[in-house]
Every structure is written in C-alpha cells, then in structure tokens.
Length: 231
Ligand SMILES: N[C@@H](CCC(=O)N[C@@H](CS)C(=O)NCC(=O)O)C(=O)O
Image (cartoon, rainbow, N blue to C red; front, side, top):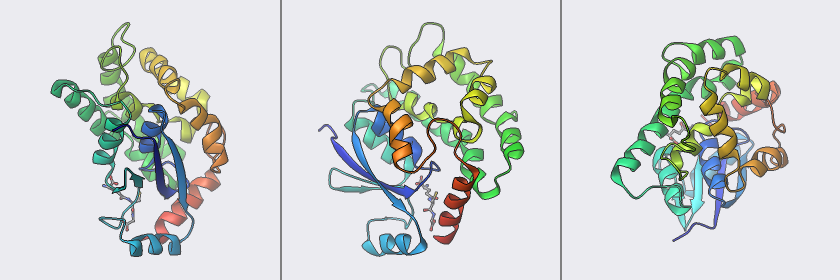
C-alpha cells in the first residue's frame, strides 16, 4: 500500500534523521515534523511507549512506530516506490545505504564538537566520505546513468543526497566534490524527485533551519544540547 503521510520525530536538525525525511520527500510523501526541544519532550516520548529502544528518530506511518534507521528507511522506500523488486538491486540499495551511514559519521558527530577543520579532515581521510566512499559511488553511477540502479530512482539515490552541504554550504560542497562530477549532477537530479527541492528550500526553513546553505553553528549547538540532555 502506498504511503501517504507520516510524522517524523527528532531534534530540529539532520543527525540520524535527515536521510529518512529525504526518502519521504523524494517519494512525494508529505510528513509532519515533530521536534524535540527539551529533555521533558524526550522523557514524555519514552513514557509513551512508542520507542522500541528509547531512541529516535521515530517515524509514525501506517499505524506503526518505526525506529532504527535502516529498516525504517527500507520500509519508507517500499511505501513510496523507491525500493526495487529484484534481490540484486535490493542488495545494491542496501550496501549504498550502509555506506552512507559510515560516511555520515563525521557529520553526525559534528554538533558535539563544532570543529569544522576536524570534520573536514575526517571527511577527506582515506577512510572517509571523500577518500573511500565518493569514488565508489562515482564509479557506480558511470557515464550516462542517471540513478544508481539505472533509469529508476531508489533509496540508494536518496541516501547519498544529503551530505556536506549542511556543514560547509553549497559552494564548499561543489568544491569538495569537484573530482566527482557525476555525483554532483546526481545530487541535482535527486533534488528534483518528489518534493525534495521544496523540503530543502522551504520545509527546512519553516521547520527552523537555515535556507539552502550551511546551518548556523548556534543551531548545531542547540541540537547538540538537546541531544545531550536526552541522555
Ligand atoms: N541505531 C539507531 C541509533 C539511534 C540513536 O542513537 N539515536 C540517538 C539520537 S541521534 C538517541 O536517541 N539517543 C538517546 C538515547 O540513546 O537515549 C538508529 O539507527 O536509529
């Protein structure tokens, strides 16, 4: 059954949640953002019994309380036409999703130290986003292949969409990915899926995020504080 609506609960930031919002936006599913502001919000959420492991992100859809990023992303992709039928293609989606989770590590931890140089070094290291993962994805795209699976977009494309921009801004993103022109073109293409561009340019702003480029450092700090309080 096609997914038509969802409620997404997380801090007012990207963290581990943004890939899930991106899947929904690329899949054309309208979602309500429920933002945790203080420790009491997280305590109340835990008390509600909706969190299987007392962790967020939480996506409420189809009468389910979805937790854990990987199965949630797959479930959402299945509900909005972004999950392939063939096992080999499912595997490709799965490994790209898992790789993005590895590659996002420095960005998820950034709000906790706010050291842009450190984050950049981690991203550029041989084991990081730019050293290890981006070259593989560039090769997987290959000349003339619009999406990772070919002509049809999938969860894999959504997973790769949201990276460096939120720390370094649009111009820096283009410079850092200069060696990966196919990935940059892919980035623009995926922005055109569903209401992704609207989520980037309007939705995030309405939800209290900076429009377009880098999130203000203060916002990262707020997000870090909220997350730390919830522990
Ligand atoms: N493997 C989990 C990790 C979730 C996670 O670590 N969430 C953090 C916020 S980013 C959290 O809820 N921390 C509060 C806690 O663990 O009590 C997933 O993929 O969702």
